[in-house]
Amino acid sequence: LPPEEFSQVNGIILQKKTCDFWNKIWNFQAKPDDLLIASYPKAGTTWTQEIVDLIQNDGDIEKSRRASIQLRHPFLEWIRMTHCGKSSVYKLTVLANAMPSPRTLKTHLPVQLLPPSFWEENCKIIYVARNPKDNLVSYYHFQRMNKALPDPGSWDEYFETFLAGNVVWGSWFDHVKGWWKKKDSHPILYLFYEDMRKDPKREIRKIMEFLGKNLKEEILDKIVYNTSFDVMKRNPMTNYINEIKMNHNLSPFLRKGVVGDWKNQFTEAQNKQFNEYHEKNMADTSLSFYIF
Ligand code: A3P
Image (cartoon, rainbow, N blue to C red):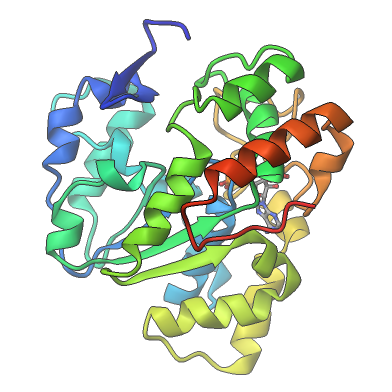
């Protein structure tokens, strides 16, 4: 990893801009009506964010297009209270502090690094998980195109890096298992990318109920349409078109949006190695993923 841009908090690799201000982030004061959208990177975060935002705005697409998704839902780990310098991070910070309640924030932090005030205030949390093989492939392509993350190297190299958990925000396995366990003692709606692909309306309804909203069928149908892959890909507010660190020519942000793309990327040997690792590392949880 380029040492000047990354560091660690309790063994988890994070961007330096997070580590340097870790004290402030850890002491972030959540409010009881804050909503948090949490996920491992590339699990379907942006999709979930757009669904949540449209539900909160009763399906009004003009309202949801008021700003890019990263400005509507600031990144918790980029929030600093003051003196954070220039650039987009500064804008996010200012916005989070000035944001009217109820606020919606986003995070990729593993559960053990979530600021304690979220638990103390009993905030609602939506977590989205994706099967690890597609998640890995999506993360690989994301690291190729996003200059804010380390160069992934070759596919074969990245495959090993991911399995070892040496990626920004830590191991996929620890992440999904940790949040799954926490759901026993805290209001967490735990969603799966594959369920959202299979029956988006059912999953959107689940989110609506969790948020305590009651929208008409026709509005739900509108939300299903406006959060479909094709519509979100055409929407510059959700496709990170203006994010200067991202090179969409290398790989688009909304890349394929399907289940099972790993089959185009894994070798047979990698698949075998992955399956063995997966079985070993998922033995201590009731959480399961279809990976075949
Ligand atoms: P792929 O790289 O497999 O295409 P995140 O928002 O957590 O970074 O996740 C990005 C992944 O979710 C990408 O996966 C992206 O295409 C997919 N995605 C985003 N919006 C989607 C949608 N409306 N429907 C299906 N997949 C979507």
